[in-house]
Image 1 (cartoon, rainbow, N blue to C red):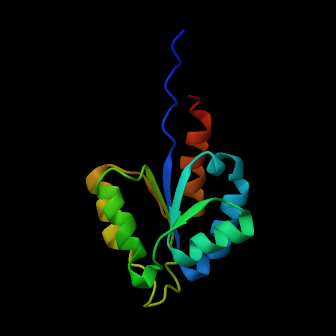
Image 2: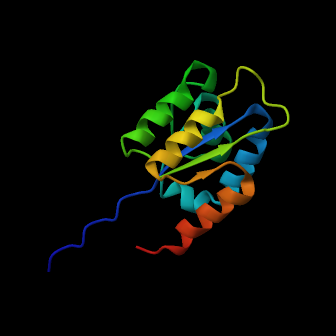
Length: 133
C-alpha cells in the first residue's frame, strides 16, 4: 500500500509592535499545540520571545527596524507564507517599528490572510485548527 503524502505544514509569519508583544505571547500560548505543527518565522525580538518564553521553534528574521518585515514581505510575495499575524499598536506605534501598510498591501495582492489584532488572529488560527488533514 502506498503511503499518503504528508500535508504541507502551514507557514505563519508573526510580527508584533512593542506594545503588542505581550498579547502575541498570550496568543501563542493559547494556540501552542497548533503553532507547534506549523513553520513559524518572526521578526527578531518577537521571535526571540516566542522561543524563550513559549518554547516554540521560530525562524528569527531581522528585527523590524532592520528590515524583518521586508523579509517577511519577500517570502509572502514568493509563496513562502500562508498567513501573517501582525499585531499592531495603532495608538502608540513607535517610529522604529515596522510599517504595516506595505505588508498588508502585499497580503492583499497575493491573497494571503493578514490578522492585525488578536480577535482576527484567533479566527484564522481556529480555522486552521478545524481543518483536519
